[in-house]
Image (cartoon, rainbow, N blue to C red):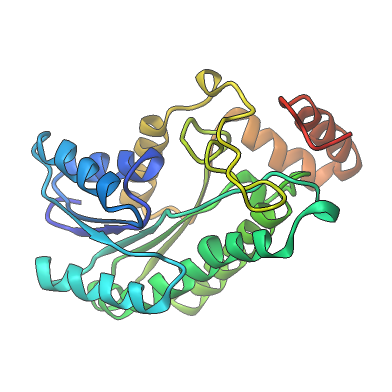
Length: 268
């Protein structure tokens, strides 16, 4: 990845920032995006102090025009785009029957349409450079999680889109990776939307028991270098995908019971 230009959406914190550091320390030139300028500037400053060639660009992935501007800025700064990492994402936590549909739409706008906009904006460069399109999906894209209708729906849609893209570009030497972390320590659960769209404010799970964002980033970097198609992370994640394929009824019960144990679970 030395001297490759890598664009990472949602790179201010969590997995996105860890990916910027991982690719950056291996010689890539990085452009990260985020909606909050203060958070973005802080991330860029801290990564520059580690010797990483990085710039930030304020953008909202759910806005098509922002993604066009993001791609143009990467080319202006670095002359090309080799890798796009679609990392920006948001989650929710509410029973579907109680959730305001605007909450689910917002999740879809960011997690799914944001990927479409960013990918289409960067794709001419990536095709020309025989580069990579990476989608940070989730185990929730293989197995629906109760209380996360919008999130799981967006990740199932993302998995399908990436499969389509990989097949369409099969003979054009473009690498497409569907990366599916299991539960990973990040701030995504703190910022989860509740049924009325308000922010949850704290994680309902023990973040200390999860894979770190840095470890997750190392796996994704290696999968990118090796041009893997699908990456499923954590033993729990791999087991969930396996059980859901072969024992769906059992998995319904296991997943329900596991999610019901969360603090303040919406499951009765």
